[in-house]
Amino acid sequence: MVESVTIVNKESGEQIEIGTGANYVLDSVDWDSPSVTMQSYRTPFQIGKTLSGVVVGTRKPTITGYIIADVTKINSLGMTWEEYNKRQKQEIEQKKKELNKLISVYQDVTIKVGEYNLDARPTGFVKYSTDSKENNEILCLFSIEFECFNPMFYKQSKTVVLATTESKFTFPMILTSDTKDEYAVFGEIAKRQSMIAENDGDVDVGCTIIIQAKGGEIKNPKVYNVTTGEYIQLTNMTLKNGEWLVITTEIGEEDVLYYNIYNGSVSSARRISSVDVGSSFFKIRRGSAYYGYSVSSQYENNVDMRLTYTERYANIEEM
Image (cartoon, rainbow, N blue to C red; front, side, top):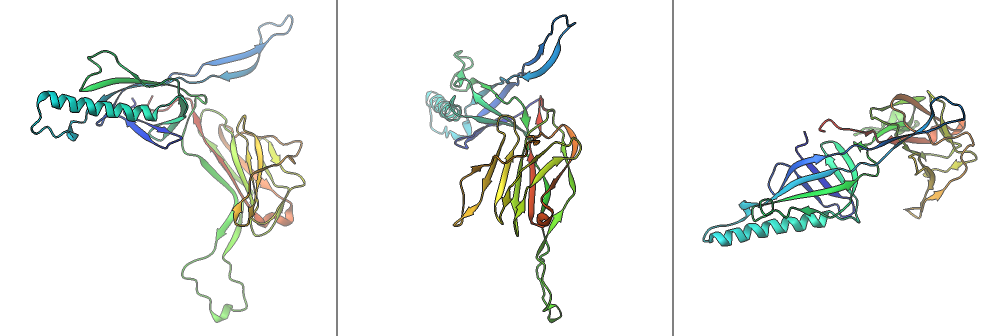
């Protein structure tokens, strides 16, 4: 059972915890369950139908709680009962204002539950009870309704490093006269034929691939799923030292963007269209799979390549 949730306004960064402490006390959370539609078609004289796809709908959670007057902030010494009740009511109204400021139908929020997150948009303003037993100078019952256009919970992203520079520098570093005619090695490229990516979530997910040239140029970079053979490759593409690509494979956001450093500043993104005809914006499949990379052989020591993805879950342990 959920004991506490934190709502974070993604635009302002402000947040409120609704839990078991003072001010905002959690009553209940209805997480809802996304609808699932099976798409199918039927040919003449066919028995039954042929499944053509699965569509998962949105999630519409509701959070219900109480605003409680924080009496520890009220110095009741010398107050009449009426004055004390008035101060409690002012405390309730102040907490309402803070909640109203956080919840807007024009701004997205993230609902945090332990290590899990759920992105949402309020579908209305905060609703307060009109019953005097639930809305008075001591407490106030409220509810907030949301819609999650991506209905899946998620945790912190994972990163798989396919190639990078490994530091050889140690402190203190002592260079003796015996090594005066030799090179001091401060780092070297860590070559990896393939690395495993584990997706413990409930669905396949897109990923972000960052490819950067370090120490020299690279040509025709390629990233692939060793198991399935799916890949994405840039053809007739040369990255000079310090330049990089950001490949996004999330559904609806598929893209390849190019960046460089000009006069000490990061350039504006430039969309790249030189993607090999057999490429696909592959997803990180559920379970485990190995991923590898390649570049034109004479440039393989100049690569820094990372693959980042976020596992997503239909339900969480606290539900």
